[in-house]
Structures are given as C-alpha cells and as structure tokens.
Length: 286
Image (cartoon, rainbow, N blue to C red; front, top):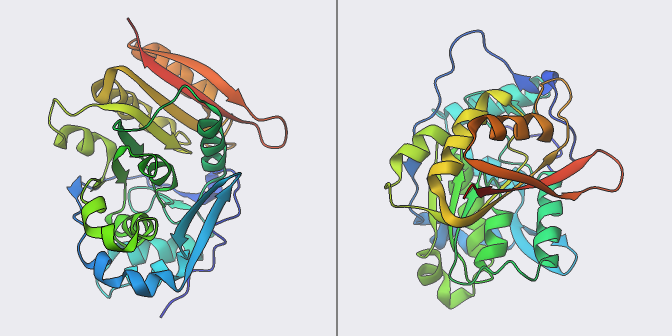
C-alpha cells in the first residue's frame, strides 16, 4: 500500500512547481451526486483515527488524511495515479485530476474565525454551499449551526472518503442517518456542477477557501456565483492576496468580478502579517 508523504496541514502558496500543467486540453470531470451510504457503516473505524480541527472556540472532528487516502486507493483508480504523480513531483495539484482536497488550507481558518465574529451572519435554516469543500470544514461549521448544506469538491473520492466521513464524525450517534440526509454532496467541475443543478436551486450563503489560485477558472466561478446566489445572498471568498507564480489572487479575482459586471465585491477582512490573505464578500448588484 502506497503512503502519501505530503504534510497536508502545513500551508504554502500554490506555485508553478506545484501545479501539473498540460499542453493538451484538459478534460474536466463531470458532475456527479454522491449519496452517503457505506460511510455510515464504517464510521466507528474512522472515529478511532480522527483528529480535531481547532480555531478559537470552534472544534470540528475530521479524518486523518493518510487514513482516508488508503481507502481511496484501488487498482483502477485514476485518482490514485494523480495523487501518486503529485507525491512524486512534490505538487499539491494535478490539473484536471486532483485539486488539493486532502489538505486543510490556511484560509479556512481565516474564514471560520471571521464568520464566528460576525453576529449579523445567521445560518439557521439557510441554504449554504461549501464550494471546493475538501475536508468540508466550512460546511460542517454551518451545518452545526443548523444550515442546510451542499458540499461540492472536484474529486468524488474526496467526498466519499473525507468530506462525508467528516460530516458524520460531527453528528450525534443516533442521528447520523437522519441528519446527513439533510446534506447534499456533488463532485466534478464547477461548470458541470452549475449546469446539473435545477435552475431554481440557489443558496443564501456560498463559502469557498483557496479556490482562486488559477485565473483560468474565474469565468466559470463567476458564472456559478451569479446563477446560484439568491437575490439577497452573500459569497465569502477566502484567499491569498497573491499566489506567486500562477497569476491568481484576490486582486485578479476582483478584476474578473468587475468584468463580469453582475456582482459587487468588497474586501471585508485582511491578515495583519505573514503571507497576505483576505476575505472578499460578493453580493448581487441591485
């Protein structure tokens, strides 16, 4: 059994040597809804190897990345090949194959802390989308505050072996099957995900962390926000000001929002030191 050697919990910038580039056109994965099933049966095994995400007063249980990875490895798994390539070449991402879902990124902590300090943001009975969710920390945070959460990540293996188990870890034992039925899980490319949902499906709050490192994704990201954000909804994008080497960052993203013309953007939080990080709030223009 191969072992993944990356330290998923130490963050760094996404740079050109961490992204597997291709000169060929990338075939992005089609959207697929993932139904929680076997994970409920296996939860006891996961509990024994769980860790705790801690940010201030917030504590959220999550599976150990290496344990989850071992479950993902099957003989015919393209995901296995992509992750092994990432390991071999010391990358965090392989374009079109693996989008970093095993790592809890630094800006997730920023957004959790920010949301916890905003008394005006209410989650009870709100429809929330955790976009590019990975471990699902943002969505779980709102789920524990009685939101109705849709989790989306590029790789279905991440949802099956990381996100869904993490949601289950944070539900009371006798409520697991009932409570997780309130959540939805989708894998695949953002454009495919956007087209799969019913036209009437909109969200009150969309949360996303460290998803704007690649400027080539901005158009479909903005299209998703425009179509899936409710009239009075809010998007919170937590990201580094600059992802060195790949051209992405909050200024470039704001430029794309302005070009799109249908959303207002405002920086609502900035880090005080270290690698510059921000949270950008988006709302629909009136």
